[in-house]
Image 1: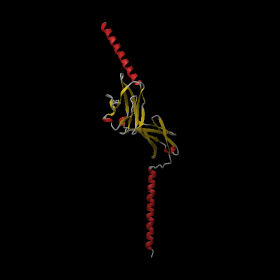
Image 2: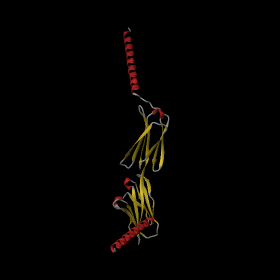
Image 3: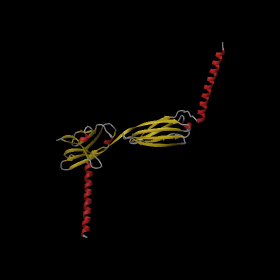
Image 4: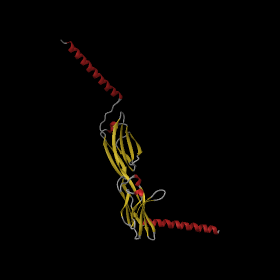
Length: 267
């Protein structure tokens, strides 16, 4: 019975310690004001942390959050100034030198820079007070809209390349259509989405406008294309045209031969 009571007491004590620890971490984070950023890939980007209390800060450290453990990037203190770790030299720097407010800047963002970072304010008597800010990198969509006539159908293609992956939808009148979508990821971090609208009756779309809508980062952009009159070839029509051309050539040869023979007979 005593062991059971002791076990329950120890369990409650551990629970209280866990709650206290989580509360302490939440409080520390609440003292730091941060803001997540979305920036264009291959351009400069900055992340900022601001300590909301008047505690005495000794050192400010920026870390990249990784699966195994956070990795130190750069530190700032009055005694040592700015110290950038070798792996991040010429990539980042602290551009706001302060112990209450700190800003790091990426000179030219790459895919490896996307992720979350934490700033640690090492305070006198209270230990580390930390904040977290995340950086998201994007690429604006590049869109191509075109169409092609075939013997018995019409294909209208809308292709968009962006980061993150765009979403394509259609606004088009008429019936007898279906569409297919292909998604392709590229090593540079962008994704190409290609949607093909298959029109079974091509003549029904001549003179009409089709609209390709591209959704990217919450913004919808419309791209318009008017289908102009096309030329439809069938196999019998093609054979007839070829036969007519051959016949005209033969007639021309025959007439030329007769004319030349007539000229030779004249004195």
